[in-house]
Length: 398
Image 1: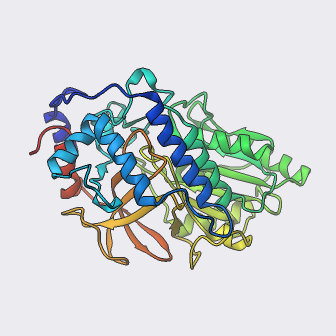
Image 2 (image 1 turned 45 degrees about the vertical axis):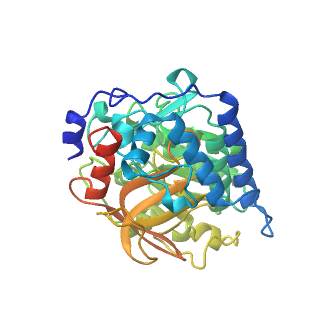
């Protein structure tokens, strides 16, 4: 259905042209400063007072975006949402992630782009890659590093970075590559990349593990689930590739358009066994190009005695940072569902300053006080609620 809508919709930026005022750079920058202040304050110990409420900042961002981004303005109009009268974050119409494939979702002109992240295009082809433009990556970097430190290296360990993904110079539009590049720089230890030219270098990875063992320095292995599947199937030189004590793994989604998939618990056990780390130290990450923040499993932080992120830390339970709110939405109406019911993930991300602060995904979730349980993508065509919103933003609906 998304393909049909794309074919019927006007070309990018041409649907129902809405005059968009020129963006005063200082207004965007002021909102970025507010978002960064919220992020920093939300992680201070002792429950320090936030500079403003989550809802207040969300509404300020929504007004900024609705005033300066034509697709967002169309969605507000189609939903009858009065941006000036909104009082709560859950009243903001959420932008379906598919929109990023068909329209520019940005409150600034292309000439002001510092960087544009693009989706992989593996499932629908390169021509349908979604784009997320950034006027500045400063807020993205702060959010990624702040939550990554809390969930991946809360012990402050000096870690070597072993990356099962292309380096940033080979994939400059990859949000995952950008995040990992910043992680490697922050960790300050040696960093090596083991996917180049589209090929996994299993031998180089094995040597890097050996160097970490010889130096007695723990490592963090960062990569996509599919890269780990290939690594585990590769004939590694010298047999088992064990890492030093204190090492850990971050693995993230990466099966779209691929020929096979390994169950999450089976993949976790295989990675832990092959690399010689406890299963608790294999951490799943949930992120997407359209977001500026990430969710992680809390098992490593709990095992290391880091700051508690939820009442319970267990495999399969993902934790959002304080500046990100995840709720389950009804697939038909996109209305919020009570805690514990299964629906589509609606994500409000305060680090999405210049694009869409509220996103509607097609990922099925169950959200409770313990965390977010990921249940896979909705099968088949986009859910009805997402399709209607997509049509409205592209100018095809009332």
